[in-house]
Image (cartoon, rainbow, N blue to C red):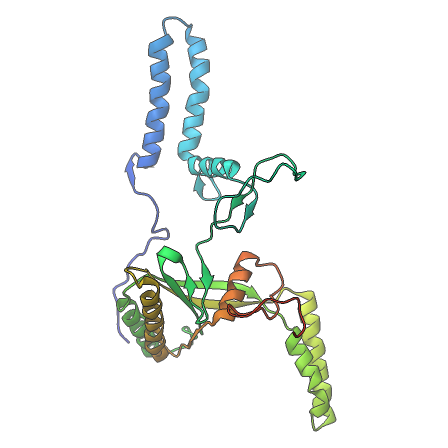
Amino acid sequence: MSWVQPVRIPADVEQEDKILAGFTARQVLILGVTGALPYAGYLAFGERLPLPAVAAIALPVAITGILLAIGRHDGISLDRYLLAALRHRCAPRRLVTMPGDIPTPPAWISARPGPLPAPLRLPARGVGMDGLIDLGDDGMTAIAEVSTVSFALRTPEEQDALVAVFGRWLNSLSGPVQILVRAERVDLTATVAGLRDRIPELPHPALAHAAREHAAFLADLSARHDLLRRQVLLIVREPAAGGNGRASAAARALRRMDEASRVLSACGLVVKLLDARDVTALLASCFAPTAPPLPDAAGPDQVITAGGEW
């Protein structure tokens, strides 16, 4: 078993550096401005107003500055939280998918007075037939689903081998990569229906009884609990550059995904590139995690109909 010198890794690698008396540069700036404002007010009005009046004016300013500097809400500093709340308050509430500006409705339409909706700006332009997401000027993105392995049940030698292979893949990266671990809902309706449909084909009554009981168990489990499964996604993005930027970015993204599949296969991991249908369903579930899964949706090159055959 190889021995490695332990290295302490901070819990929050993005934590701001503290430069003075345990305060960060942002906090020092806020406290400095907070102290400068009452002092400037005292220099300007100290001789004209009594001291209690000056203190009554300066006290709310000092308390507000201290709260903004050291206060936190849900792990976010209070000044950034209030700034985000202000941006949210000023942002339009109604967004529509439209490429340009929203035109003013004509006068003959009895529209309710109020602000016009704003265009919804999404980073994704569309999903291609190969499953790649078009990000416009930001390039192309490929998404793959990766299986998992049990690291804790491996021997120390096997663990060292897994870490070495994973480190070799990390060292070979030439562009942005994201590893996303998400939980998604599991729908057992098709599994239960398929199990019940095959019960008459079973050769023995005991097997049919066991299958019937198992189908009832799965149906009851799905009805009483919110079933979730863990999904690991590997996301590769390639920027678009040059006249043929998107095509070359798509080729590079697919090549990098193929390299990841070959390297990670040494760890026992299976990297499956998602096609257009799977990527569309994935994006839809990310926008509405609590919504039921989409039915069979039309592909990017198919005509959307209301159902039935033409």
